[in-house]
Length: 123
Image 1 (spheres, rainbow, N blue to C red):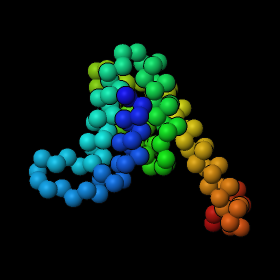
Image 2: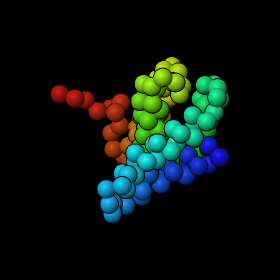
Image 3: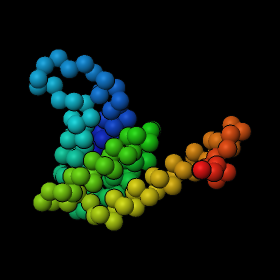
């Protein structure tokens, strides 16, 4: 339930966030999604198991923004009493996402005939 529910919510976060709020008690979409995903993950007792679940969730997400949102949500949820995952896991996840983004960005530029980061010069 944790993986499919989290993937679905995070893949729809853009749609949920654009929903017009009707009253004071409608929570902003992004905040609500993050809260639900964190609550689902907190139901898993072992940190190692949560890290495995989060890795699987990240694989199922369709956009970089959803992946970054999940990583940031997890990072800031670690500020409480019970850390959700290790700081090492968060750092490694950010590095992997950054590396993947840069690789895709460079490949995209080369395929379109525009200079990628490796050929661009600043200054």
